[in-house]
Length: 123
Image 1 (spheres, helix red, strand yellow):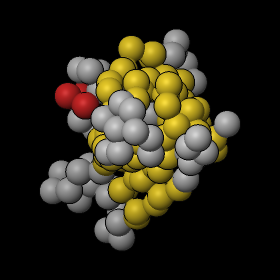
Image 2 (spheres, helix red, strand yellow):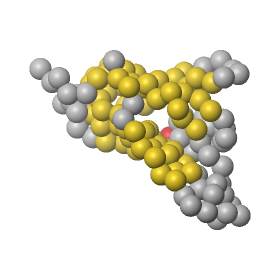
Image 3 (tube, helix red, strand yellow):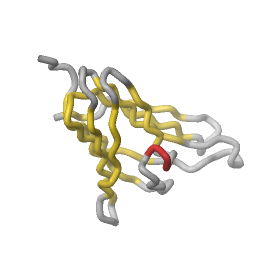
Image 4 (spheres, helix red, strand yellow):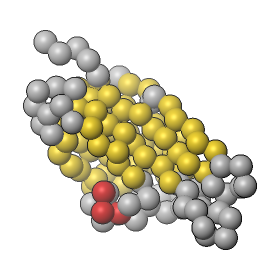
């Protein structure tokens, strides 16, 4: 039995920052996922906002023993959903197989860029 990873992960502090420094650099964030099983995983993102209903139509398959960096600034990776910038939101990541999730954000709105990364809460 594979006891690595979990099937549900929570990222409460998500935020896609604006571009900065005269639009030369683009702020971005990524949800990095590892499928640590021998079977393909069905992944779902649910996005929660302060002022609107959740978005739950983001689904994709992550092949067995593979990793994917899902750029929240790339609609083609989100089933066509265009994530608004400068909006606080949260992400729930669900899977039918055990996965490992990490979250990273690059904020370029000030001259000193900020890169943060964290391992989300899992259940």
